[in-house]
Length: 279
Length: 260
Image (cartoon, rainbow over all chains, first blue to last red; front, top):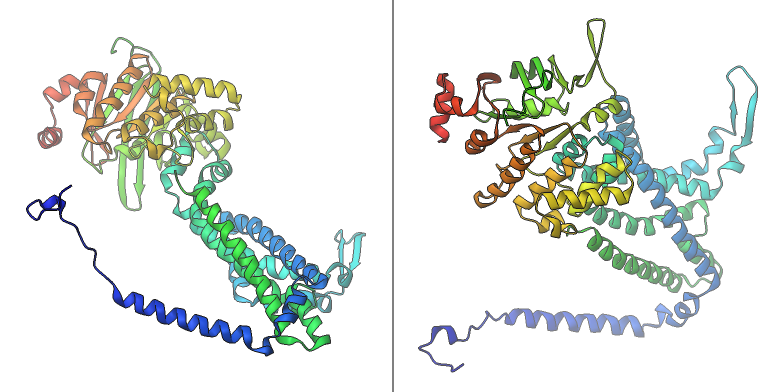
């Protein structure tokens, strides 16, 4: 097309230039390079030690334990959280009050406190037994054999997680228009079926982004169980540097692994969100 | 169609139905009979209680007093020694299978295709085998002129198409009575006709229908009876042509002069 001034449709449009952005980008890149150079060349970071321990068998076992704890606590949180959310939204006053009280309690007490509390549960009740009132004992077991560090970790992480997840799921359920419930009721469907087939699948769009965040928080929150001597990723590296005094490089090892896990999870979250987006 | 409407027992019978939200009475001593196989159109200004009345018929809204029967079955309650006992959810859900409902906002399930919307309740509620449900759903979609759109999601359909899928979805439960709550009010004007045509065909098959609408043309052509409601009461009722041509009540005259 000939470029002539008298033909308005042929005139080139020049977008607004942003020279400041280019300058700022250059400055930022420069700073990044300087920091990277300093980190790479400072011998105190002990990069060879980091490399040595990245795939160390002990570290990998700790990593595995971290992943298992994250998965178990999140599954617990989601299952219990869904039940709590439905209780909270129920017309039954008893159920909604119970759920409210549970959420209030487990969101208020710090997870760290809960972990230590569960770990020391034996101090409160040394035996756990089940018996018929005024009748024979069905079974009795010492609290310390029942509540292992793993049990205490799952209880502490899972129970408080379920309180948060319940609120997320409740928000998701509330976001689905009431017309959906009315339509399903008019077809003769019952409450539980409506939740399972109609409401929850639609609520997923609202639920998944915050739950993705919670999973990512949980990966790092599992490091709290190091206080009850459960050898997850952080505690494993702590055990190693207690022997070798290579504190900084081993903390870097742990940090790098957390970075890797969270990065992989973020990719997973992206695909999940895409799957539940409305067509 | 008025020839069809000669059964002794009405498909829907309402006696003395009242309902309030707090201090505001939305339905006041409603009596209504809809014979099997006939079409009842309900018109009236917004806030007159038309939609609430429909919701009471399949117990989506509880009532304060009065009784209503669908196919001779008391809706929502069990009568025992002069008292009405509210039925458990299971019983109410079973009863609702007899009553199909079509909503102003379509309320299709957005995460399911047109076909999935239709087969959901027959499979889950009636425990119909999947193959049979699909076959019936395909036939219903064909009947509402959407045979080629089985695999479309609601968001990929026009408003008129969505409402026709919603009608097919309600019909899939083999209801004895169909309720339409302003089925064309949310549609663009050029899409109203296709939905009304499907409803008119349905009326021809002898389906008992209660239609809350602002489409006076449809009421005149298709309805066997017309009811005009205002302020939670039935103000005027009768043959639609006669009532629309020469309304007796002042309130209905005013209403018609505003909408026509």
